[in-house]
Image (tube, rainbow, N blue to C red; front, side, top):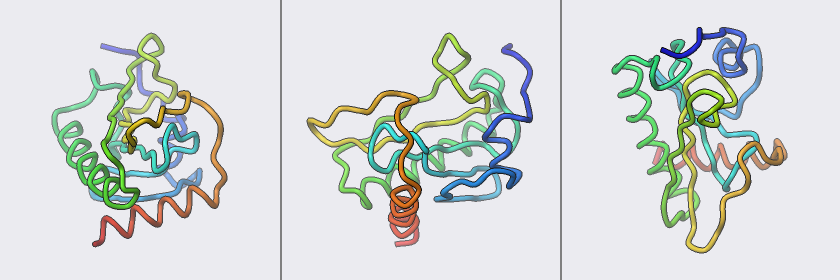
Length: 142
């Protein structure tokens, strides 16, 4: 079992409304929002609303809810951004590349011949994130 869940992590603060996020989707169990350091245009994150540090700590219910939302977001990204494909990334603990210690899934739209930006790269402008979030919300409601 991995380390203890820290409720002061940035995603827990977003869930509590203590920090802003460009929300894309929410249901009873999950929350999806734009990554502020996107590796591709439309890069979104999906998290469970309940505490889980890593995939090892998560319950089957948390995982199934997250993956159902990941699929919704991926479909919306394909439509909204004309993506050729989707890359799904999920990191666990520092050795596995995890930076924020609340379970999360990176859903990245991909295009043939376009490389991903670096992980924990450059912050995107808020207006760009807001516009991309709006495109995803529109595709989700279509």
